[in-house]
Each structure stands twice: as structure tokens, then as C-alpha cells.
Amino acid sequence: MRFALVCCAVAACLLNLATAQMIRQCSCAEVGPCKNQYANSVIPCADQCQKHAASVGANYPQLRACLVSHEAQFRAAMTCMEQKHSQSCSNGGGGMVQKRYPETLKIAAMSEIDSMLNKLGIAGQVKGLMATGKKLFSCMRKCVDAKAGGCGKKLGCGLQLPADSVLVQQAKQCAIQAGFNTPTLQSICKCAAASGISQLNAICPRIQIV
Image (cartoon, helix red, strand yellow):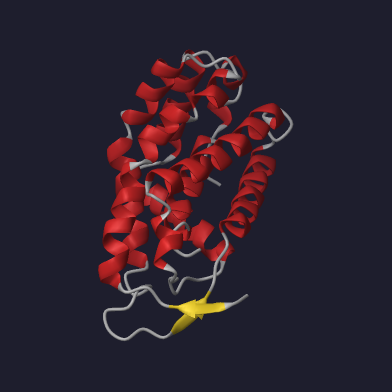
């Protein structure tokens, strides 16, 4: 489940900038500062949304330590996505691009998560955690947008990006390249379980990349 949330977070950072109608394409110069504001808000927003972690029994400082220890990998995954879409903004006179909506990304991301959990045969066991995960995702998305001053919307432009389902798959591959492999995910899962999320104890050994 944590791997899937990593994918969501990485892809969400892009889509928050690309908020079907046609709008002007953002220039790379105006996107840069905005992108950095989103990236720097991930951990602070996890802190702000910690009530959702507490609702499933987590000791948040312990859970936070689990995530912060992998911050470099999170950033590497984000950099990977940025490189994949280096041409999504314009370095000159950009044209028009299709307006994007974060909610459609959420649907695509949750569909991928459901597919992964079903393949692993643990969908039923994590149903409650998934409900909390959805609330956490929504809280995080709203928070990063607020901390970035809503710069994505204020720019009034969009990025040239592929379909949401493609973005989710690309985020998944970038996460894997950044080091979120099966052993790492199981380690993070065990760390989260030790923080108080006891439902994960029986699930962690079964987590794998699918």
C-alpha cells in the first residue's frame, strides 16, 4: 500500500501544476519555482495530515521517521518524473494544452492500487487502511496546494502531459528506479507496523512489486 501511495504522491506533484478545455501551456520559467514549492511541502503536509495516521493506531513521530529515512528516494522519484516530462512546459512560445483535473488522477491512482492489492490477494485485509489512505491522499493534495499558495492554479496554464493512467504507471516505474523495490517496501511496511499499525503485521511479508 505504501508503494502505491508513493506513486500517488509523485504523480500528484505534477498534476497540481496542470490543473476537457484548452488552456495555454506553462513556460518552464514560471513552473520551476512553483514545482519546488510543491516538492518542499510533502513532509510538512504529512505532519499536518497526521490525524489520519493516528486513526489507524500509528505513533506519528515513529511513522514519520520511517518516511523521512527514505526522503532522498522520494525526491529521486520526483526528479525521475520531472525528467520524463521535461518537455511538458514551454521554453518558448507555447501553444494550448488540455486542462487537467487532480480528481481524475486520484481515480486512476486508486484503480492501480486496487489492481495491485487484488493481485497480491490482500485487498480484503487492507480495506480499512485503504479508506484511511484515500482520506490521507485528499488531505495531502489539499495541503500541498495550500502551502504552495495555490501557485498551480494562479499560473492559469497547464502542462503537456499523457493520460492519467500513463502518469500513474510512469510514477510507479520512477518509484522502482528510485529504490522502492520489494525489500525496501517490506522494510517500510514493518517500520510502519512497529509504529502501531498492527493490521500491517500479517501483510508486510506478502508485499511485493506487481
